[in-house]
Image 1: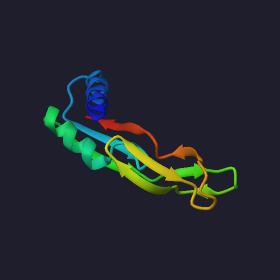
Image 2: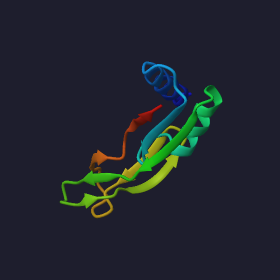
Image 3: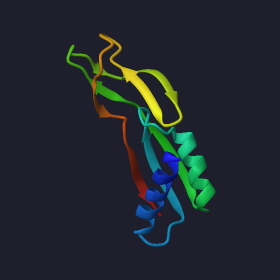
Image 4: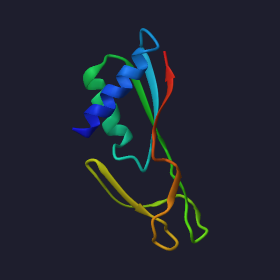
Length: 104
C-alpha cells in the first residue's frame, strides 16, 4: 500500500493550491511506482484530469559512465537498476522522483 501514501500526499499538496481540476505529474523511470500505476490510483480518489509523464533516468557512476540506467527488474514497490557499463550501483541524477509539474 506504499502507493496509497504517495497518492494521498500528492492530493494533499495539490489541494493546498485551492480548487483543483487538473494535475500534471512527472514520474522518474527509476521510481518504485510506474506512471500508469500512479495515474490509475489517483483516478480512484479524485475526479481531476490527470496527466502523468515519465522522466527518463540519468545516472553517474564511478566508472565515468553518465547516461541512462539499465533497469534489471521492476515490480510492486521496487525498481532494480545498475550502471550499464560496469554493472555497479550508480548515483541517480534524474529519474528517481515524482514531481508535480502543473496544477489547475
